[in-house]
Image 1 (cartoon, helix red, strand yellow):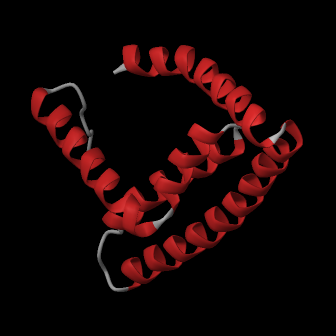
Image 2 (cartoon, helix red, strand yellow):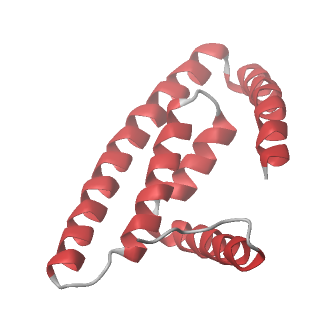
Length: 130
């Protein structure tokens, strides 16, 4: 897992720079800067809105006496989506919006759950309880 994260940290900036240079050649550098600022503002607004909505759902789940399992996974996706939206670039913005929009977030949540379940099954991820 660490290998993939390390590889993404190395490759992603180069890809982002390449896409920005290409986009700057197509639409002009000032439009690229304005698009990056615009997506950052829209992303921050969406992350705040989705985050507060998920927080309210978690509160209702706890008041109903159940663990907010789905809400926790939503919160993780929203947090990651908000963070990558703050980094300048079109690829990270696309990833961030996928994680922030509920209908596109659902398959990512399922993948995270499946991965965690597999890691627990293989003994690579443990939950300690008292």
